Image 1 (cartoon, rainbow, N blue to C red):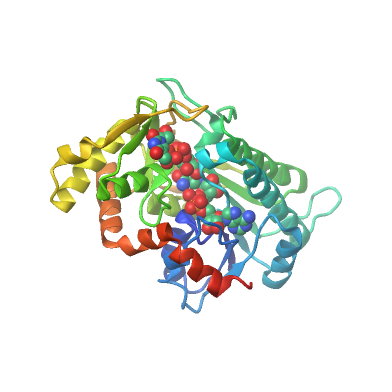
Image 2 (spheres, rainbow, N blue to C red; image 1 turned 180 degrees about the horizontal axis):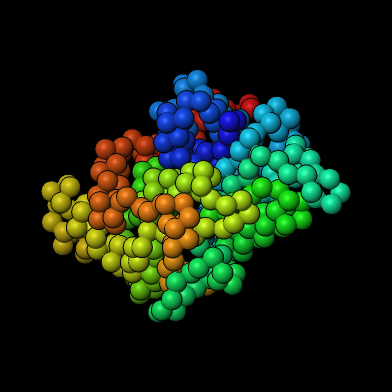
Length: 354
Ligand code: NAD
Ligand code: DAU
């Protein structure tokens, strides 16, 4: 198979490629990425010289570039991770979210439609599959009770989640209207190696190491369901292999935690791993102004993917968090490079002209 992995230089996409490129030498994986601030080619150093790996610097919001890419690559499978992914950034500047998440997904679907073709009545089918990676945030907020199922009504709260919801609707519409083979996964909060340090867990780890305040929004009582990133990648592959075409699958870690619990757990693990007193780190906790439109609680019912695809997460919150802390401790240079702008300079020097 020729597999296009959009957003492959980001957090989840790079973990996906690190798992799948060596595991499936019979498949060719093309990382399709604009290389925004969130991308990091250092995250792909383990696969960059593999003979079944290639990189294409492409902005999916640019139709001509996407059209050229598809003419060159003719994919058998598109795994679509590329997105603007940070809720706080979407509140400060939603435009890029609409461009990439909605227009970018639309361009990919159009390119697939053009490549695969369809008759007037939409009857022509193809084996080529579009796997859309989406989020539980499309469902909006739960109260204290209940779980998101695949039937939960869409009710997004932020520009980010609204843009992802739009992209989900487009993907489903292409399936229903043109008969295109698509699958969608809606996943809860991921954590693990190679996550950009703007997101809660890597940001907190970094601030602990630098003895900076740990900014907790509101009262820290918002609940997220946490899933180790490799478990998410395995879930996507399980759905690609065993999921039903045209279906949606919710993916979650069965690991609901209040934000304050996440921070307390991290303080304990970082303290242990660095030989620091936990109280010193706990003393850095600072309650700050809440995120506007902050969803209270997300929780996933993952029965369908377990039943139909045989997927369950391997890591628990405790084992996954410890692995994550260890990765950030062992890869300080990765974070420093991202923060100092060295990495951006290196990437522009190497890829600026492409
Ligand atoms: P990320 O921000 O770490 O990476 C996004 C990648 O997409 C980057 O490499 C970036 O350069 C690329 N990209 C952005 N705009 C692009 C464009 N116009 N053209 C081509 N490439 C572009 O994001 P992530 O956390 O790895 O999330 C990946 C996907 O998974 C997203 O679609 C996100 O909505 C979804 N998701 C994320 C989580 C999570 O907890 N992180 C949970 C559920 C679903
Ligand atoms: O649920 C899936 C989503 O999870 C993905 O679709 C998004 O791409 C991903 O970014 C993530 O969104 P969140 O907004 O949940 O993640 P974030 O790490 O930004 O925040 C997690 C929780 O922690 C949230 O309730 C806000 C809170 N928070 C976050 C930051 C950055 C803080 O209290 N302080 C912080 O500094």
